[in-house]
Image (cartoon, rainbow, N blue to C red):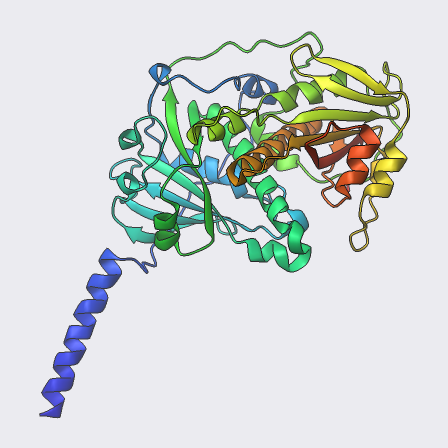
Length: 430
C-alpha cells in the first residue's frame, strides 16, 4: 500500500516541479552572448552630437534588435573592460556594483531567444533565462505605445551592497551610478542606429516579483532611427580618433596627473560633452513633470592655458564661462573632501581644474532621483570625453556638501553631486 502511494506522490511532485519550472521560472538556461566589439567607425564626438532633445514618435519605429545589438548594449552598460582587475564599463563607488540588469524580450524580438525574462551576468558576458513568457504587455510602460515595445531593460538596485561601506550616502551613489550606466547605454545604442527611451513609470512591484533581485528603478526600451542626423560641432570641438567603444574600454579613474598643459579649448570640449544629455528630460516627462532637472556646472580653475584662475559657471546656451570669483579654490575643495582609506583626495588640488556637477534639490522623491541620474550621465560624458582628449579624470563623491557649495558659490537649493579633477594623463594612469 505504501509503495504505490509513495510512487504516486513522487509522480505528482515530479509533474508539478516540471510544470512549475517551465511556466514559472527557475530555468537554468544560460546563453553566452556574442563577443562585443571594442571599436567602430563612429567617433565619440560624432555620437555625442546626436543627443539633443527627446525624440518625436513619428521619426521612429519599434526596434528589431539582433543578439549582437543586445550583447553590445549590455557590455556598454556593465560589461567587463579589464579581465584581470574586473573593471566594468561604468564606474561604481568602491567597485561594489549594486546594479543588476534584467531583459524582457517579446516573442521573435531577437532571433534565437525565446520570449521571457533574462538576467545579465557581466563576468561571463551571458544572460540567464529567469522566466519564460511574454511579460512586456504587463509592465504598463509609459513610453509612447508600449504595445510596440519588444525589448525592455530594467535597472534594479541592490542598495545593501553599497550601504555596507558607505552607509547613508549609499542611495546617492547608487542613483549616480544609474546615470553613468544609462549614458553609456544611450551612446552605444545611438551607435547601433537605435534610440533608447527611458522611463520611471512602469509596474515596479511586478518587476520586483518577477526578477527577484533588487529594487526596480528605471526601464529602457529601444526604437529604430529612420534617419541619420548631421553632427554639428562648435569651432573648439576636435573630433578625435577614438570611438565610443574605445573610450569605454579605456576609461579609468585617474588620480595622478603629469605636468603637461590643459587648454581652454580642451576644457570647453569637456563642458560641451557634459551638455549632451537628455535622460533627465525623458524621465521627468515619463512622470508628467515639467520641472527643470538639468545639472549645473561650475569649474574651479587653477592652471588652464588661456583662462585665468578662479571659479566659473558654465552657460550651456552660449558655451561661455561666467566668472564668479578670481580665487583658486582647489585647496578649499580638497579640504571639503573626505579621506577614504588610503585615498585623501590629493588630486582635487593637484588637477589643473575641478569640474563641479550640481543638481537642484527637490522634495519630490522621483525628481531628486532624476536629478541624480542626470548628474551621473553628465559626469560619464565628461569622463569619456577626457579619455578621447588624453586627459585624466576621476569622480570624487565623498565630501561635505556645504563645504563644496560654499567654496564655489553654488546658488541656494542646489546640491553638489560630483567633484571631477582633470589634468594631463600620465603615460601610466592611476
